[in-house]
Each structure stands twice: as C-alpha cells, then as structure tokens.
Image (cartoon, rainbow, N blue to C red; front, side, top):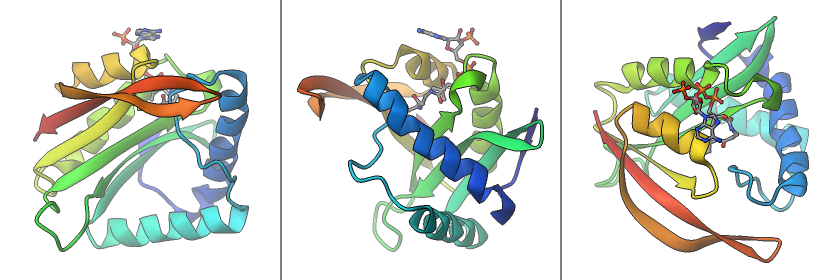
Length: 171
Ligand SMILES: CC(C)(COP(=O)(O)OP(=O)(O)OC[C@H]1O[C@@H](n2cnc3c(N)ncnc32)[C@H](O)[C@@H]1OP(=O)(O)O)[C@@H](O)C(=O)NCCC(=O)NCCS
C-alpha cells in the first residue's frame, strides 16, 4: 500500500468508490457516511475533485490517497472551514476506504500522514462521527481526538435516527 498525494488520474477510482457507498447505505441505514440523496453525476464528481486539487494548491485542503495495486482504495482529507472568516483556522476531516480494504490499517496510515501534513496549516481539526460507527470512533480516539458533544438524532435515515458525536483535535 502506498499513501501519496492526489492526482487527477485518481478521479475515476474515487468516483467509483463514492458511488459504492450508495449500495452500502441501502444495505445498512446505520452506515457511517452521508452521501447526498440525489446521486451526483460522474462529471459533477470530477468537478468537485478538480476543485479539491485547486484547494490543495492554495493550502486550503490537505488530502492523501491510499493506493493498492495501482488503484485508489481510500482517502482522507481536511478542508478549511469557511475561508476568509474567523473560523478559517479550523479544518474538517473526512475519511473513507473501499469496503474490502477496511480494518487493515489503511485508515490509520492515511490519518497519520494527513494529520502530520496539517501541522502549521490548521490549528484545529474537527469531525463528526455517527454513534453507529465504533470503528471510526476508535480510530479518531487513537489519534487524540476528544469527544466534545453529541448532537442527538442528527441523522434520519429510513425512519431511524442516529446521534452524531462531535470530535476535536488541537494540533
Ligand atoms: C472508518 C474507516 C475510515 C477506518 O479505516 P480502517 O482502514 O478500516 O481503519 P484501521 O484498520 O486503520 O483501524 C480501525 C480500528 O478500529 C478497530 N475496529 C474494527 N471494527 C471495529 C468495531 N466494530 N468496533 C470498534 N473497533 C473496531 C480495528 O481493530 C482498528 O483498531 P486497532 O488498529 O487498534 O486494531 C473505514 O473503516 C471506513 O472507510 N469506513 C466506512 C466509511 C466511514 O465510516 N468513514 C468515517 C466517517 S466518520
């Protein structure tokens, strides 16, 4: 496995991974990610990823991808909270791994690299994790994230409410 910077040739793999989450939500409404109700088009996803690359260039995003067997199987990013405002010292972290490669240390390797690169760029990294996602919660705790509160019934999916745990790391 290789942890490396994002390239525009990774976009197809990443879109495929993102689209696979719809099937996971369908199979398990407590699944830890929150894709849009309306599935975006491949073109919209490419545009969004191009913007991510641009934001990396301007220092407003940090992202690393995990490559396994010449394909991107997951990524972790930190995006600056509302640029040009008094909250832009904060970064919001997101992470996801293709189903078959979870619980093999890929998330740990991605987080280690991304958080290291965030030092000096962001002062605070924040995230939210569903109460139904103990694997992600354990990962974040291991990197020193503190739970600072719970938003009760923050997510409603298939009629089921799920609490959201808010977490914070001071770099
Ligand atoms: C959450 C996610 C990013 C973690 O990445 P990963 O590669 O699976 O994580 P790792 O293998 O590096 O570490 C996971 C840890 O959780 C543990 N774990 C696995 N299943 C668990 C469970 N059901 N409950 C508690 N801990 C669990 C593992 O043992 C491991 O800890 P260890 O290294 O001390 O043994 C990944 O599983 C994923 O993409 N999940 C779906 C998307 C998602 O939930 N994203 C996060 C949204 S907040």
